[in-house]
Length: 276
Image (cartoon, rainbow, N blue to C red; front, side, top):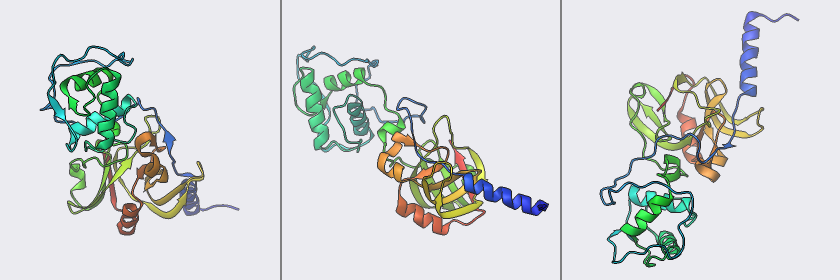
């Protein structure tokens, strides 16, 4: 049976949608990541130190006098988030950074101090901070916000007109914008360095509420396809594992409630801008 030109084009589009899709994949914690979130170092020592690969020995040099306290219980901010991320790197703090110097942080600092023969105050003083800095590396963005929550980046100029899914790879956020005004924001993650999410200006060409990838046999709820097999969709893996995983090129959304509302508002033809 012969197929007309129009029939062949339709068949190609159906085939593309059928095989399109992406799912979560593990990524190396030391792999390529966006630039780290800047933090305020106004209250920290100005000396520069390098990371070491081995733990300090117990009973190492102790301060001869009380050291200036930099952060303590109840403090909040990006500085505290960095302290928590560094404590996580040396396995003293298991929970993800919150930006609040809470009880788990106090306990982690006490343990870190005790292991090094420092006074177990639970307060992050200058000596403890310098020791922690030497043993760790500056946290990347995904380490500071492993489960999302970064402040949204400034919208790209191409997002300022019309109906736009404005996706920032720098802050790992999606803004749903209409005529230059932000309607909603949500955390997103992308493909790994080997399966990157494409950057540029696209448009939503197909929506599928209950889509399932025929390549990876994984669910892609609320899928909004914008470039070949790449789509914006909800990811249960992102919700569970945070940035410790990645997609195969899709834009994963962590909050199911937010993407459900977004899916109901987005129309075919709406613009998608993916940028750094």
